Image (cartoon, rainbow, N blue to C red):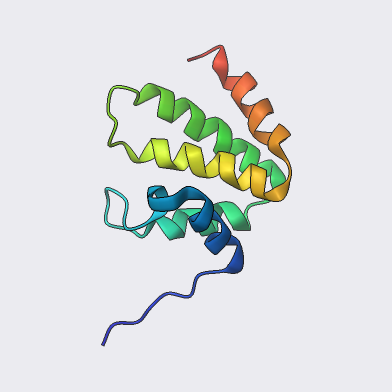
Length: 100
């Protein structure tokens, strides 16, 4: 018997915003919604660190359009926007842009 994971209201908002980008499983077979929930559950400080990490990794994987890092970077941006704190993403981008 298959059980369906319960998706939080916040993750559902991200799913609606991200369209097909956040549906299904990642390249490791894990539901992308697990990553979205991790972001939703993060403090602003942790979200900032996640943004820095995935902005850098997405840029690093620019030659691989199938890399999970691209949807993860997009999700970080969308979560900052959902919170009304776009400055978290902007600050993270500025922080790592010199190393990209």
